Length: 353
Figure 1 (spheres, rainbow, N blue to C red):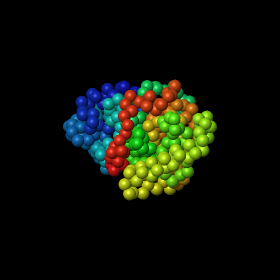
Figure 2 (cartoon, rainbow, N blue to C red):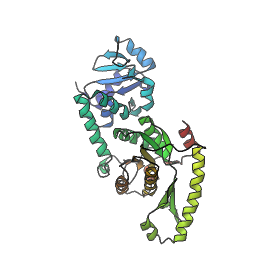
Figure 3 (tube, rainbow, N blue to C red):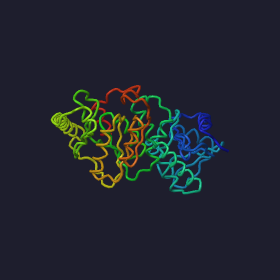
Figure 4 (cartoon, rainbow, N blue to C red):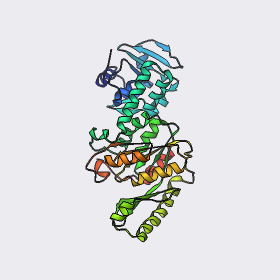
């Protein structure tokens, strides 16, 4: 028996269970995200009333790592947890695809690495190819370039790709403010810490939204001399913008840190997340700051960026990816249906959580 994604959707709905209490696991998350084209069976974790309903349809047995298992017709196995993880832990990292909850790709990678069967090795290779394609600036041009719904949508799209890269010792670093709601789904999918990396854009005096550079915490300003020359900026004009943004930087660090130190990046994989990159200057500064803070690897993930900017970021980071890479690209907000400004309270709430 082989099932494609529409067939899996129909099969799950045929169980007549509350979908919020069912999380698809095993190989199905790879199918849901398009890394493989079919599966031979369906594994799922059921919680609450869904588990109670399934327990009436088939006998329970002990799983290999302490889970309870119910074998159902149609090649379905229901689990009370997932190979030693509680159902709540799996649910905390899950995300929705076409209305169904699927386990995080990070959980799938760990599971398949642990089992190491020929099928698992094949699936891990397919996942690596998929991740390579999704992080290739040229390949992304041919993907759906419809505007993102909002920043949470951007994060939901980025999360499985970042997880497929299987970063070692990941720490997600959001560029506040707009990067925080994008970063939250990524950190949740990886089950890793979320922090902010405070970077300020250095905007042209005549057009503050257009950056000629950026400055980050603990680092020297990064300045694009080509833009400075093209704009005929004087050195004193550049210095004035730098000093203004340096003061704003210190204020934001005090606000977001709330007296706490930044997370240690020593030996970690820093995953720098923002809602978009029009020129890439802010992300470039963030890459430099993350490396100066001891990050062993840096991945940049943004909601929207033009292909040439994404390619440039990929050269400076270990990996660069964007949810969409549309052209023509005039501004980040152009490619969001809802680009409402993120409030400081929202940033603080996400960090406290």
